[in-house]
Amino acid sequence: MSSARIQKIFLVLVAVMVVGLVLAGLVFVKAFDAWQLTKRAGNEAATLQNLKTIAAVEAQYFYSHRRTFGTFEQLVKEQMVGSKFAGNPVTADGYVLTLTVTAEPPAFVITATPVLAGSKHFYLDSVSREIHVNSEKPAGPNDPIVKK
Image (cartoon, rainbow, N blue to C red; front, side, top):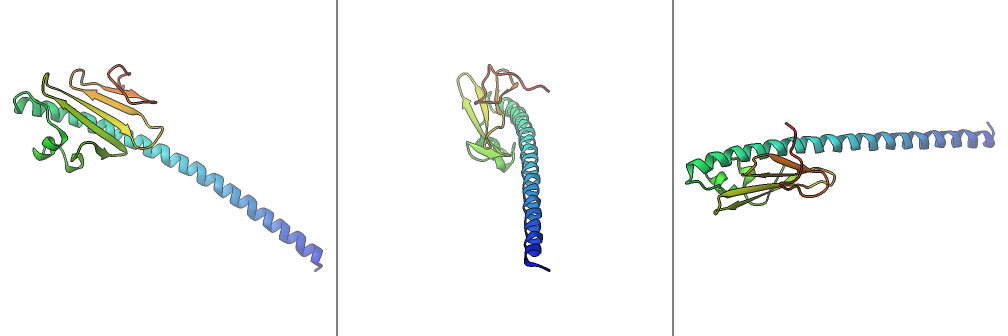
């Protein structure tokens, strides 16, 4: 076999390997994007459930503690929520949850800020007890309500 023919075979093999690596890279990128979207959706669903749970627990706390709302620390101490809510702010399921409680008038506000960019922001307060959402910036009481 001539050296020119060996060089051609070698170049064809290198070209096939390069094309294979490029295709493998594209598949990896698509799979990674799909994984991130799935993770983001899971974090959002878990955070919505966390907000609903906290709102329900706050209602229980309010009626059993002289019409005051509890901080995360108080809710954990009373064993009304799990230890994953210890501290303020709390990082859970890809979100930073901040709970603000006021005594006069008795009220609470919970904000959920995503750790990953591109995720939705959430807001819940004791007045409306509805979860509000904003896709671009921290959510507030004037943002759209999450559809149930």
